[in-house]
Amino acid sequence: MSSFKGSFHYTVDNKGRINIPAKMRKNLSPEANNSFVVTRGFESCIFVYPNDEWAKRELELGKLQQTKPQDRFFTRMLLQYATDTELDGQYRIVLSKDLIQYANIQSEVFILGAFDRIEVWNPEEYKKYLDAQQEDYLTVASRVFENKE
Image 1 (cartoon, rainbow, N blue to C red):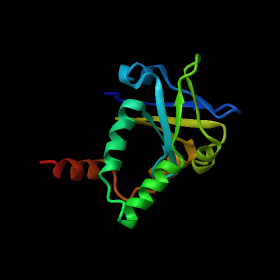
Image 2 (image 1 turned 120 degrees about the vertical axis):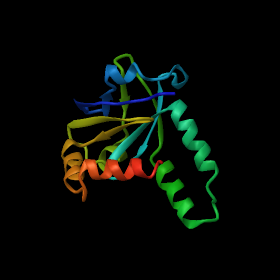
Image 3 (image 1 turned 45 degrees about the horizontal axis):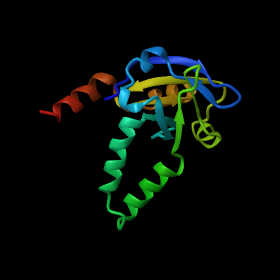
Image 4 (image 1 turned 90 degrees about the horizontal axis):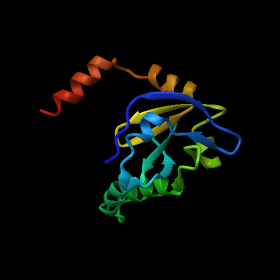
């Protein structure tokens, strides 16, 4: 199982490549085989799933009811942007032009470990996301952990 945490600031080159931070590569499971699926995230970010974690998402997608409009819509939006990519010799992956445009990425990226995936954000968009939150971290944490009991 791959597991990611922490955050890093990097740049994207003119070919759409970003480095995967060494601390995150260290937590990449052998089953991922240095391969990823990159797709549209929620909000304005890009999700980067190692292959082992993507396989779990595919199992979840297979359980959706394709007769339900919401399930079809979600499947289409997730898979429309999904592309396979592998780490190159300099530990970079390629982001498609469509995804770069979707996430409003210019030259800088904010790379965030989000447990089973890596998120790639335009740093300004991430700040807007944080500023738009209606509740503070402690309030949300209390509610999240309250519901787990």
